[in-house]
Length: 125
Image (cartoon, rainbow, N blue to C red; front, side):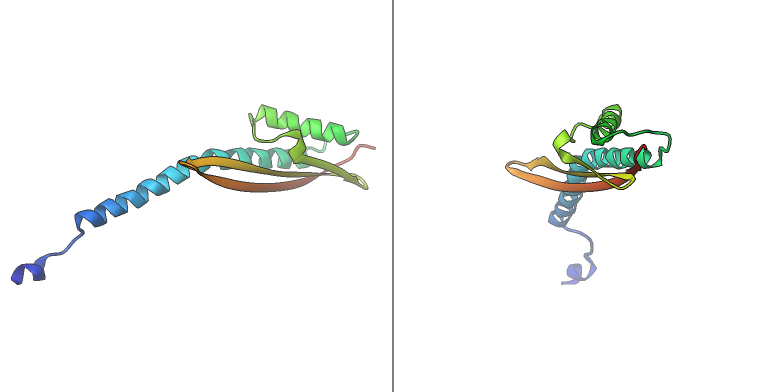
């Protein structure tokens, strides 16, 4: 009866469970990290288009083409032309990027991530 009073610490099963949780979190992070890095490249491409005051855009197609070229330079592969919508209102072109990424996770489980970005660039006169 005296031994039970002095026994403290984690059991083997609790250590295995904690290691499993740490491994699961690391696995999930490794799966999601590349997708979020690509999303960061997409948002930085849009921001650079907004800040580029010297660029001249002469139509909806030229705005979309310039954006797609920036994505090619950044090696972004998840965006298709259908995911990019360009519209004009007044002196500005509005770029809306809306896309989904499906990541195979474990077995037949997948993760579905939705992303949406928008920007506006000044139209050439």
